Length: 196
View 1 (tube, rainbow, N blue to C red):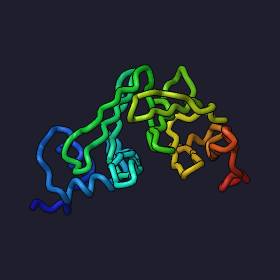
View 2: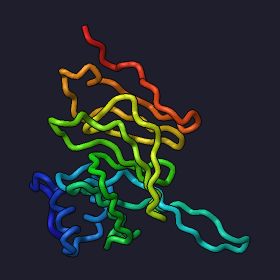
View 3: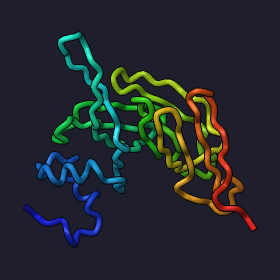
């Protein structure tokens, strides 16, 4: 097996080989599944996709971790969900008329947020959810702060968001928000860094 030591952007190399359909070792696939970010396509933080398996007492729900990547296209975002062996794309979803910069999972749905930088338009407050099993899209209430490159992470009932790219001349550059599913709304969190 080829060593990955000395290759500067290993995650991009492995992602490109995988996307091009070039067979890569299982160890590399596992490494790709754990990777956080690539230049062109970004892995979506681990997603639990439902799968049903019959048992003696009927149907039971079983979660399975899956790797998915997203790619911003012109006026669309494409999401590819890989099979359990990471060997091929099992589900490909296209989210039309929405270029987003961040995709992650929340309550077994894909969350789309952010907008590519534009001089004409501010960042986006919009938050969309897509059910990967049906492709149906719904929306959460808008975030309080418009963001270009938000970073989002979800727990079972909350979404936490902050900016990846800090624009120092923006009054909201250090703002963080939380969406609480029980309340159905966004709230600002106190700043971790205060102006002096």
